[in-house]
Amino acid sequence: MDQNAKKQAVALAALEYIKPDTVIGVGTGSTVNFFIDALASIKHTFAGAVSSSKASTDRLSALGIEVFELNDVDSLSIYVDGADEVTEHKHMIKGGGAALTQEKIVCAVAKTFVCIVDDSKQVPVLGKFPLPVEVIPMARSYVARELVKLGGDPVYRQGVITDNGNVILDVHNLTIINPRELEATINNIAGVVTNGIFALRGADVVLAATDNGVATFK
Ligand code: 5RP
Image (cartoon, rainbow, N blue to C red; front, top):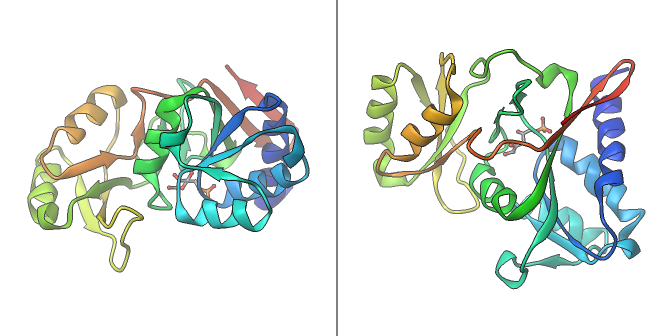
């Protein structure tokens, strides 16, 4: 099975977690795009969506799915999103699509975070995928120096401005043994908006598409 077929299979599997008449938190990325397309086929069974990016909002709206502002919603039953890396502890690196901050906010509100990946994203230890860090533009050089002190090699993602008007540093060469601690440490650097480690609030369920079907990790 090729990677797109796996993304589609895992996106379809996530539909089972949708509760009738609720508002759904929707992530960002190519795997989530398959999920959004699948949502369109059942759009009359749920109330609408809160989106984590302009790209997902545009895709949801184009398919006739109502998109709510997070501030207008009291609760989200689930949040469905992809990941760049995920471990057996359901810790993740996210932000390959630069949407990490809004993703972290929407997933914080949701009762259940369902992470959808193909099996290429499963790793024993986080860090081979460069860790995205969203940074206030004026703090870019300072934050980069602080990230070097933590042992990483930050690279400015040229030409990318986030939906929040900020920039991204991708931190190479980290071996993230304690993701909860590193997530908090990086978030405490002045000028960091958030980083792409999702461990303090990890996934509740990971659905991973393999050649033999979709595996579920709870
Ligand atoms: C975007 C993300 C995505 O979830 C992550 O990059 C995975 O994307 P894809 O499904 O395209 O591999 O965090 O900011």
